[in-house]
Length: 179
Image 1 (cartoon, one colour):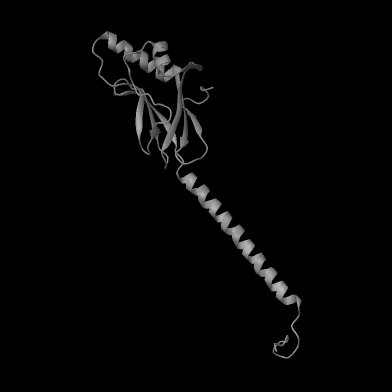
Image 2 (cartoon, rainbow, N blue to C red):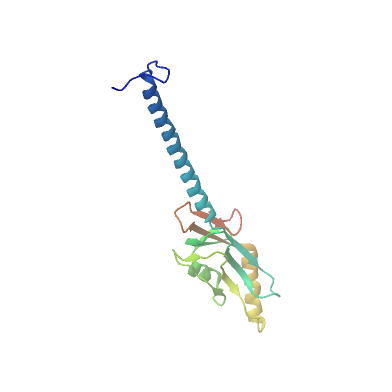
């Protein structure tokens, strides 16, 4: 026969096993919550560590070719391009073709991203550029007009997202000129 008594022969309280079982359940619930919070934090850190940072660089010295606006990804993760929009004198122009029609600068070189294109870490492209040394007054006039455009009249807005699911961002080449 099994005795319901401790080592000193006194009976063990009937509430003690229930209390110990409840304590074990409470500890396991706290451990599960803690594990879930750690998973969430590591997931957020992974997303943050993969967040792209898209920037623009303006090269506007006509004596030091190429001249243009360069887009680059200086963040730790690749950027998926959602859209690129052009503004002239703080007014919406739209896409690359509309910009070229608006400015009458069809001789400049362009790089046009499509929605969903990816800009890798460290990758950069000239969106608009003039790379060849001008020959004659006509080409010099075009270069001067292009430099004036990128210095004083043009802003470019890019909307981009990280490759992993996360928040998309927008960046304007000239603060306060986009939208």
